[in-house]
Amino acid sequence: MTLDNIIIETIPLGHADARGDIYNVLTQETLARFFGDTPITHVAAYTSQKDAVRGNHHHPFVEALFLFSGSYELVFQNTHELTKPPEKHIIQATQLVVFPPHFAHALRHLDFSLAVAFSAGQKTGDTTKTVIPYKLL
Image (cartoon, rainbow, N blue to C red; front, side):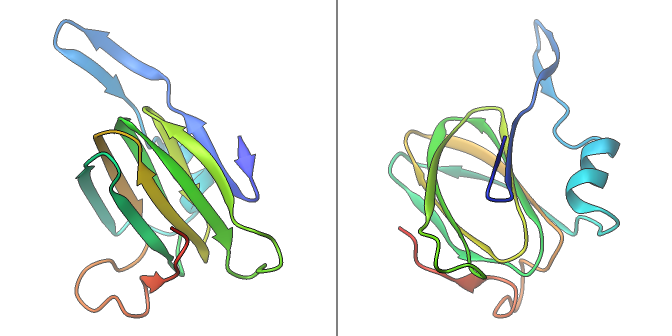
């Protein structure tokens, strides 16, 4: 599904057995489709408590979020098209959300969540030019 250039895809179960489940979140095909020739330079796993708000920012690069468990309300807006109001969507476990550059995003977690963020830009050290505050929630 694509919402105003935000891509939301449910990642199918790749393998399951008595030990657990495997999801092939980023394959060679999805890396090329979402990130092109730009390498992923940062991967972060994080947890969020119920009602926690994360984000309220945008980046000058592509970012993708994969939700392992839980759910969240996603609010987003293209910062280059401010005449359009922010949009909302509910993200469920095993969904991958891909944000193009300059799409502000905020997440309100509806229950305890575990997620992984993949980005093609600097997110550690001095991030004043790469994590740009933008209040949505």
